[in-house]
Amino acid sequence: MPTDEQSIRNLFFEWQTASEEGDPDRLARLMSEDVVFLMPGQAPMHGRDSFLEAFREGMQHYRIESQGEIRELQIHGRIAFCWTQLNVTMTPRRNGLSMRRSGPTLTILHKGADDAWMIVRDANMLTPQPAST
Image (tube, rainbow, N blue to C red):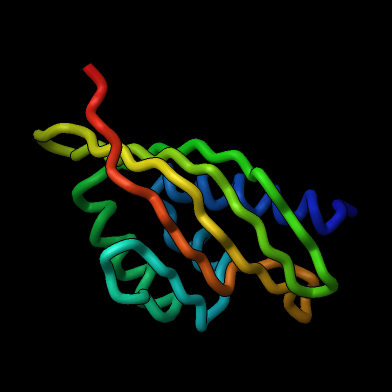
């Protein structure tokens, strides 16, 4: 059985993989129903359904590639937090230039009754990066 740390690292890997594959059903299992996402310049996004609706809409127009590294992970009983350095590239499915965003995220997780970790809060501080030449 994996340790809590390995389970959380597996969750982040699964999140990245499901995002790249455009799989909202897999993402849904990784977050609580009352999850809140915080992003610069935007109102907080409340709830799993709101996130999944936005994700599905985005996947119609973009393909996502991401790379991330967990820089700190603290586990305190059934609550954990981590900050991750993340790079995300969104490539239009049709015409247009790719958009790259980079920066830290701060994520709070909760271990549910089934002993599975899930994201309950996420502060995404990614900012646009210059296009590569």
